[in-house]
Image 1 (cartoon, one colour):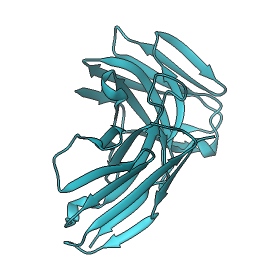
Image 2: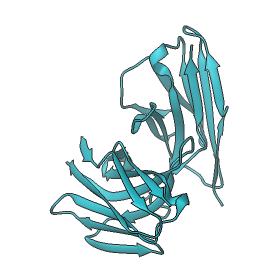
Image 3: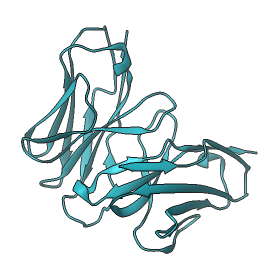
Image 4: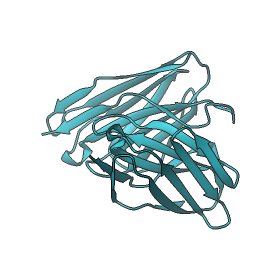
Length: 110
Length: 115
């Protein structure tokens, strides 16, 4: 089974940087994912880490440490449209199931 | 390219009524298919997943069931809805192997309100 923890809410100013942490415990780790979900919409894929280190994709970066069971999503140059819920998800070897954390609601203020 | 269709977008059903939500995927074959539910302000809970026609795995015991009558069709059903079945239901697909896209692709979701 999975135990995935992330903060409930974060607030930041437009143009700033925000880091969303995620810790997990799993018996069969096979990748960590970050999704963005705007209110009332389906989640959309942001990033994927399976090896330790940093993956950068434009304004978004994701980091993974498998030994520590830890990941973070870094959002730079925040824009108002980045206000959303960010979901951390861990994939198991078994049938590639994804288990999700409860999500972190990020509010970007002008 | 692959697309996933889910319908209806919204649904209001009385307690005790039946339910049928449908999801279809185009542009791929033998996908892994998943049904998730998201209660208001909560995370995504995996309900069912399928790795092939007629193969259904249930994650959470409840009054819901799932079927996969065709390779790219996944159906979520209930004979009698409960108030606690209200939520945002999401279908997702993934390539059956460890190939890109590595993550799930979600349908647009069905918002179900049981009254």
